Image 1 (cartoon, helix red, strand yellow):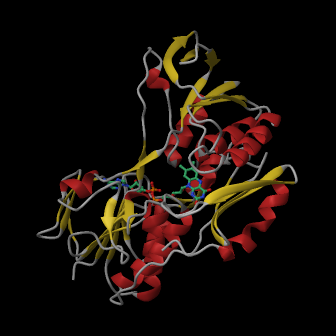
Image 2 (cartoon, rainbow, N blue to C red):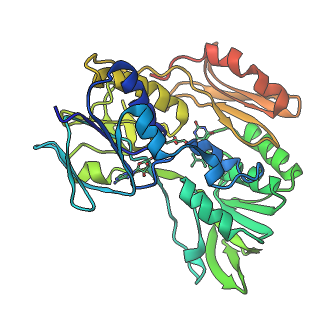
Length: 381
Ligand SMILES: Cc1cc2nc3c(=O)[nH]c(=O)nc-3n(C[C@H](O)[C@H](O)[C@H](O)COP(=O)(O)OP(=O)(O)OC[C@H]3O[C@@H](n4cnc5c(N)ncnc54)[C@H](O)[C@@H]3O)c2cc1C
């Protein structure tokens, strides 16, 4: 048997490896990663500035220790460039070919890049891994004003974090309120107020048109005619599952790599989980779905086929200036949002008659209701 090969050492790759090893200590296990293979918690990337942690301080275990703990070969700084599902091999960028018996795609997602006019465009950064974070820290050294494009979850988290490091922060985006795609108006505006009180400036219902170099910094021109000076520009406009390898290998892809509830792709012996995967129609780029998927997939890989179940999985938005918890209704769920004030925040419930399908809690007072409400929300899958 050529064993299990996992592409990716993010939370998805490492968690499925760890869960698999609990069930099977014999089968050969290989992980391949384009980065250094250090195990770290990606959510920490957006609350590390205020804690004054550099990229190395975020490492929990280096690749060598992970290899020992998992009794696995971990191939670092190598990219898988092709998968041959007929002979069951993966091809690495240095020409090495690894045979697999079962293959797991855990390759994550890529930041979406928007295009702008101007000569400052190449300076726009995104932070989706530890190396990005290291580079961004360097880029904002000595910078006292940062522009963030994208008032979504990750943009708001970085805004709060960078503000916590003492910088002036401006957030720009077309939405009518922060977290516009996730939460109803009253909740978004409560978050906006909280972040504004912390000193963050929003430029909403508009988009960035130009980014020009201006001395040592940049000048952003917005569609509403405003201009804004900033020493660094961070883009946080969303992520797109990385489906390239899968598509080129002839696997079915849609918004993500298409897998069923056993995390199986359209070709036998291949599985996917994490940010790259579309599990029974759902693309959920968060930690909790990865934990549930990893446990189910580990069983399947160990010869005991299992389906993933997702309970309600509220997402905690890391905006300490105004905490938010979101449990979005599944797409197409019947009902509507109703919001009421609680303390300095909001409780918004998505209900169909008496049935609760989702909720948003904002502010110190309201977020305490997270556990109680999560119990009332039906399972996602
Ligand atoms: C700033 C930020 C904050 C977040 N905060 C939260 C939060 O508070 N709560 C929450 O639930 N979620 C949060 N998330 C989302 C969560 O972090 C992700 O869902 C999760 O980390 C994704 O893990 P992954 O293993 O699927 O992907 P990744 O961590 O992206 O791992 C992908 C791996 O694949 C490797 N790879 C890719 N292509 C190749 C290739 N061709 N060959 C070899 N290796 C390859 C990469 O090197 C990497 O090791 C946050 C995300 C970000 C960016």
